[in-house]
Image (cartoon, rainbow, N blue to C red; front, side):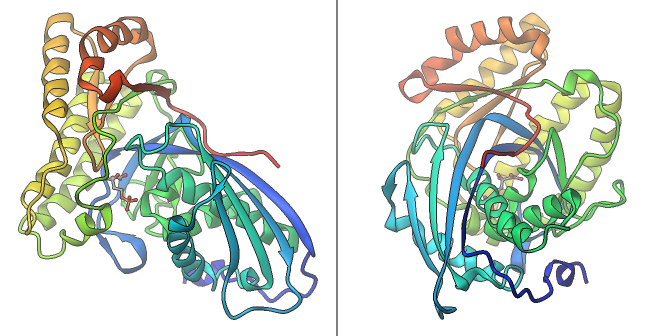
Length: 361
Ligand code: PMV
């Protein structure tokens, strides 16, 4: 039912050409999505902070073809140069969303993308990349149907982005986005992300995230494989249940600003994600020795200084260091003096919570 809502009526007057450009951010999950059913339907609900400085900028130029093609017609340029190796991923994305954007084969698309963060930094660009592309393609639909409301536009962009990469559906808006059916949020959906509907304490509105680049190499196990290993995982059901409970706990924390409670949920979620990887069949480890060194140093620093700094991890070895903006000076000093030495080439990226994607053209 929800899905059919995103299938448009037929149109006649297709625009001959046009351009659209969006800048879309990455996001970092606080309650993690790990495990999915067919068509990127999540096995459990998740919630993330939308980021600000880590983003993808995408420009789509579209030109109507003489007649509709059997194949998608597109070029892809990454940071100014053609990138053939990225094309299969885009091809798969386009075929998944074609039913919802039936005009796609009527056009030749030139997709030009670049990231604000260093290339191959180990930061996943699929969330920002897929959401930016989904937004550009939604602009073509808006040309065809100007009555599309902003709410529908964002919902469908999130719905499409999800079909590119699950977590990408949480990158359209901000600062907190929840995805996956969850009884604590009435309009929550497995099909798209929704902005967190309740009032949150001021401390969470400008929370900082410094991303420590521990290892820039290719991941040994992809997210897709990792999600798949949650099928028949011995702890899957308890884990999926725990995500619901952690969302309940966070709900009270977001309201009250209880930072100690926040730290407990967020760090437990990060370690649980990696515990799921370590107890999959086959098992695998994505953390590196430096990941653990950093975690131990954060714990020691917190004990000694009573700071509210904590960490989370995505599906890799990089560490996201989370802290309230009021502690920025102290925590950044700690990062530079104690943690940067555990990063590849001492690299880290200073980011903070953001409000979502921005239309450029
Ligand atoms: O969107 P995917 O399929 O790359 O999966 C992302 C999974 C995590 O980053 C580990 C967790 C999350 O909720 O973002």
